[in-house]
Amino acid sequence: MKSNDAIKSLAALAQESRLAIFRILVKRGPEGYTPSQLGEKLNVSAPTLSFHLKELQASGLIDVRREGRFLYYRPNFTHMNQLIGFLNENCCVLADKECSPACSPSVTESSLTKRKHA
Image 1 (cartoon, rainbow, N blue to C red):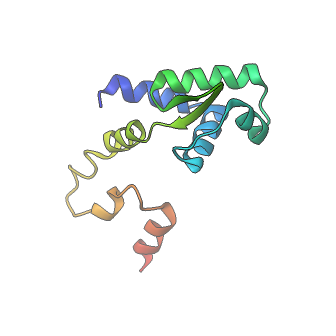
Image 2: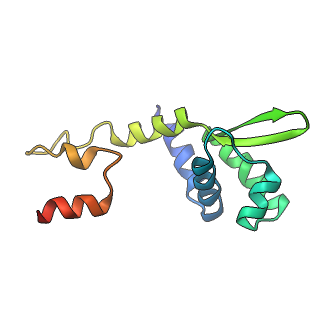
């Protein structure tokens, strides 16, 4: 992933409503949600939701599929994982000691704290 793509994706997520939309789509998975389903779940008006969905789609973080007359928005997991990889690709390369557990995307902050105190 290029830096410009990462910046565009991070900028799209740097807004509370868009972050909430993206996170609920990630929870839903490839099946996705229609805009009306998203609006109901997040209590967001249709025009506002439409604006945020366009921003997320333009950043590459979500895509849309059509089933008949319905649109289903879903996360673009490939792009999401590329962004995570971009953020994590040089983790600890300048460290004096091994820090690989800290670089794992599946490691949570609480598990890191537990390891430090163990």
